[in-house]
Structure formats: C-alpha cells, structure tokens
Length: 116
Image (cartoon, rainbow, N blue to C red; front, side):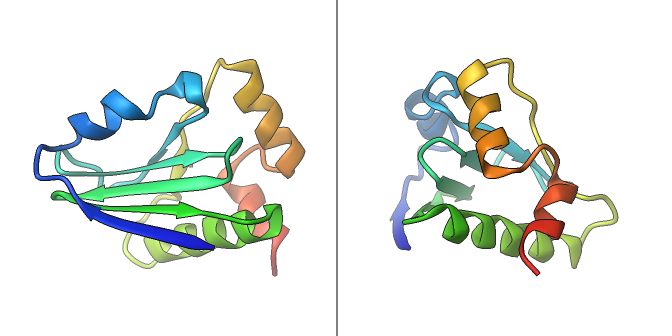
C-alpha cells in the first residue's frame, strides 16, 4: 500500500477539478463531512483520497484484499464517532457499479462482512 501525503491550501476544489466520477471516484459520506473535509473512493483504481483543511492523503492499494481491508478500517474509524454508518454515494456509471460488484461490495454493510 502506498500513501501520498500533500498539502493543498486552495481547498477541496483541487480534488473536484482533478478527480471526477467519470474517472471512477465516488464520495464516502460521513456525518463529519464539511466544506473543509471529505473522502473519496475509487473502486476501479483501488484508491482512496482524503482531504481535511488542506491536508491530503491518497492511498493506493496493491490488491483487492488490501483495498477491502482499508475500506473496512475507514468505516470502523467513523463508526467510533458517528451514530450512522458511512455511506458510498451511488453512481450511475456502469463501470463503477461493475467495479463494486467485482469487489463483492454493494453497500457499506457488505464491507463489515467481507473481512473478519
């Protein structure tokens, strides 16, 4: 697993301008979402991207199992602080839907069952 840490004080517009749903990115919604933070997932590239007040972390997974483990870790982290389960924005993109199906993930609840 590769983690790339950078700082972009320009704001979340950086992410929206460079990572689009057409490239496979979808939003991981949490109760902590705000204008200064957010999380995105790419089930096609097996990557995660997190933005918080200018700090960015892009995580590139080397395998499907690594991706599933990282997704479960992220969900478990948010469940410590939130009443509601995080959710993945739905996508009308056929290639994104197929990528989730190939991973065996249709909902966040599936993530908790995949790796125990």
